[in-house]
Structures are given as structure tokens and as C-alpha cells.
Amino acid sequence: MKVEQISIFIENKSGRLAEVTTILGFAGVNIRALSLADTSDFGILRLIVNDRDKAIAALKAKGFTVNKTEVVAVEVPDQPGGLASILHVLDKDSINVEYMYAFVERRGSNAVIIFRFDETDRAIKALSAKGFNMLDGERLYGM
Image (tube, rainbow, N blue to C red; front, side, top):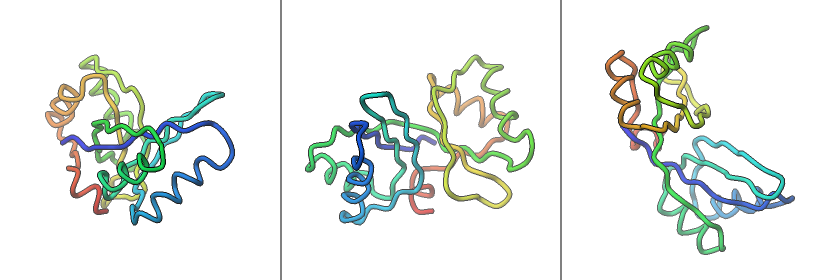
């Protein structure tokens, strides 16, 4: 159950984030989840959007560098220790979480977390074996 996110490389200066979101808005692309990591010179904006191809085309047309990356959307029990239960499964199988961020919406009694793993297929197998639910792209993009 892999999901595609887009990563946009942006200069770390005033107005660049507004420019990206404006481009996406004019293209009719809805942002479902995001994460922003920065250094002193540049940032990486990671997005889950409802239309990846449209987002990539619109951003590239304006000169942005954009990549697609596979991530996994996992339902996490929305209770104390819920995230820890997932992280223990991954730790037991020596799977590294490269980064993660929260999705904007809950699914029933669960939260949704977006994960990037060093070994995605092994992570999916380990989490599935322990009964954790992963969302497919179409369901996630349409939320």
C-alpha cells in the first residue's frame, strides 16, 4: 500500500512557500498533508495532493524542481501509545523511519501518519502482519 507524495525544492526565502501554494491553487490541486524541512539555503516541501500529475506539471512549468517519492499512510490508534505501538514493530524488524508527518484527517478512532521508510516493502509486511491498516493512494488522495 504505497502512496505517492511530491517533494518540491524551494529556496529558503520569503514568499516562496506562498508562490508554491498559489500555483497549486490556480491549478485546482488540493493539498491533503504537508511537511516542510529547511536549511539555511533551501527547503523541501513534501505534499500529499489530490492530483499529483497536475501538481507536478504546474510546478515544473513555473521552474520548480519536483520529485515523486513513495511513502506509506498508516492508520495509527489515536490514543496514548498508539504511535509507539507502530514504532516498536518497525524497531523489532530493524526498519528505519526516515521521516514522518501527520495527515489532516482522522479515520474513525485512528489518526493517519505518513511514513518514509528505508525499506518500504519490509515495513508494509511487518505492519500488515501485526494488523495495522495502510491506506491506498486513491482512498487517501480523496479524503
